[in-house]
Image: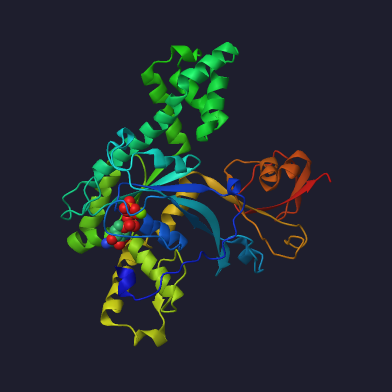
Length: 430
Ligand SMILES: Nc1nc2c(ncn2[C@@H]2O[C@H](COP(=O)(O)OP(=O)(O)OP(=O)(O)O)[C@@H](O)[C@H]2O)c(=O)[nH]1
Ligand SMILES: [Mg+2]
């Protein structure tokens, strides 16, 4: 609606998107019940031209595209302009691509086939985290139909969605449970080893399988596991492989009805009902703003806390358009941004605890083609120089000799623990 008000054309292309092989991109799923603004959030993040409508099940086939996390790039520190191979760098902010997957809406009972069922969630199996978009204004019921504002309690959505996601994963694991347990038994495989292999199918790492296994203290003989125990294990696995962050969307509606202070209280109420972090979002505002920026109406850098209408455009705007922009500005002032990039940054750097590391040549910071700091990789905190070498290329990992910390010029070994914004040169056998 706001986009129409601002009368700008949506941009069908993604900015400077050249994919790495998918295994190198972090992947984040966008989930929630129908009609809450998942695709609006996706479109505001990726600028991909996807369908948005005010009724349930607009999205059926998953939308996939590149969103971004954003950091202050080291190129400013070293006083050079970088040339990113993927993503982009503007005003010293480096935008690091992340794969976003926007799926169809989930309804309570989806695991029993209600709504669109939950098979479509299989598109999320390799996601590192899930952003659960909630209509915080309470103007969509559990099926995603529009209802009177405030008549639906968004706290209920948080609970049901988590359950449906858990039940989906439980369904996947239980489907082959008996067969895999029998095979493991026949091959005299240890329970934990068999389980590790099985759960790697849902992206669970070996150390995480071990941690859950030790914490729950279930039998080493998987045949003895009860149904409940399998469920408990998978729920813990889901928390590790698919942590959920709540995007409290449509805050504009909430503010419109209750004002700012009451809105903040409502957000606190929502936060107290969940262990997941609740991030306020105005997806429609971000989408309108990015389109206005593309159309040359405003000076705005995606993710910033403010924007300016261009002097020469002010007189060309209708009062409706000015009002729409004022509304966005007011909300950005209160919450420091529209929250769209904010929630992705929170997912990557806080919840998943990743840091950014640049491969760099010691002398020039360039690759062979002369590009300055062309890549930046997201690495799990506490990763080592050897992990980084493997991340760049298996060959580098296998033939690792030593590395150099480009900032300090110190030679480092494979066990060096990486720090955020390190620039590292890997020296490997040819
Ligand atoms: N007021 C307001 N409306 C929004 C916001 N974000 C999305 N909407 C509206 O919510 C409706 C649903 O948006 P979609 O993005 O299609 O929702 P969805 O969750 O993808 O819906 P399904 O694909 O049907 O599951 C549309 O009318 C959007 O314009 C927002 O931040 N504020
Ligand atoms: Mg949609």
